Image (cartoon, rainbow, N blue to C red; front, side, top):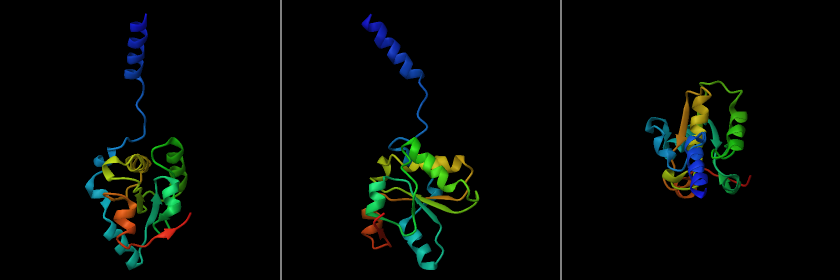
Length: 152
């Protein structure tokens, strides 16, 4: 009987629908052509052309420090976060330049960025850039002296 229950459970797990969210490591699937380096985004600020910037990581990180004028859009690793992201951008033109970032952890382990990128591209946004933060927001943005707003 125990074997039957275990076998049934394994079969159910095998055929269960996969989550629509990205898993840690999925950031590695984001095309390099849509990645923007911190120095390049900082240069956009200096030139006066600043795109819509959305932080798609955890709220505690946003409250500690974030890119000036960035909007907190919710973590990409949850359905609520993706719904919040959708709400933030739904009325925007689909060809508007959007920059998303997380920076919670090393790029290859980020649980948020790939799902947020997928959400935006699925919605038809054609000018989505993903800020490449190799280590984390602190090391790759704050410690480099790029502009920061502290507090929520």
